[in-house]
Length: 277
Image (cartoon, rainbow, N blue to C red; front, side):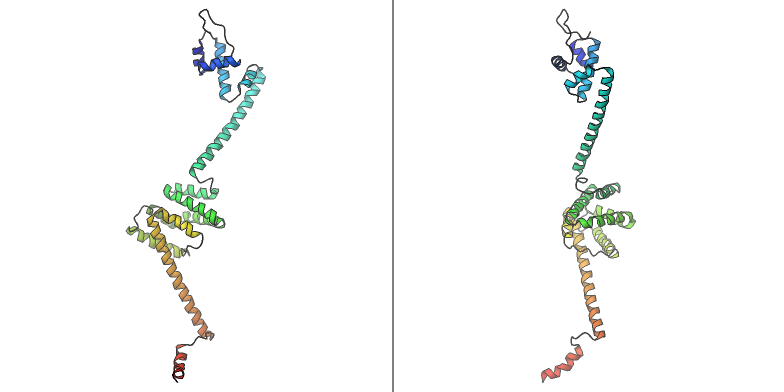
């Protein structure tokens, strides 16, 4: 025979819980012995364990009473239903955990899967978390400011990771976030990036929405503020030189075709005596 404290310890509950089950009629209260103490049988321990197990599974106490009185077949069917319900609860809780983790990362709730895949790929390549978060912010900005460009940006980013030379530059850019702006390595990186821009037909302009994105990158590092400024200046100089060259070619073509009606130097010299007279 067991005392109430021994019974509670056997079932893994408190004495107070046992008394509560007595009050609601789930567990019959035994007769007291000559000393006035309750004495419980082994069957009481089995019944208490069954009650505790069903209660831990979320079964209401009122339903537990019905299950304990059910026939074996009915009880087995009810247990099967309970197991299915627990499985559904586990699935819901697993989904809640996933969404909480996504919320903490700030990525999967704000960005499409193909962009999240890029961020995961960056981590796998050994890119610092600082650069990954910076990349994440630029994608969020791009999605908001220019959603049509996002798909093309995804293709270009994946292609850059597939190219060993571009990937090397990308990893170097990651390292440069912590360099000092006047570090000699910055000048070499600028030259390499400028060469890459020319080779890939990029002039590093910042029209419209790109200004916001470049500003976010520059905020992250004084070194990158300098890098972007120098690259933008060089690109501007190339554009101006190209525009001057194009204008000169158009004027030369117009003179050759005879459609240039502006006075030449010879015409001005010939007209000079007439003006003096």
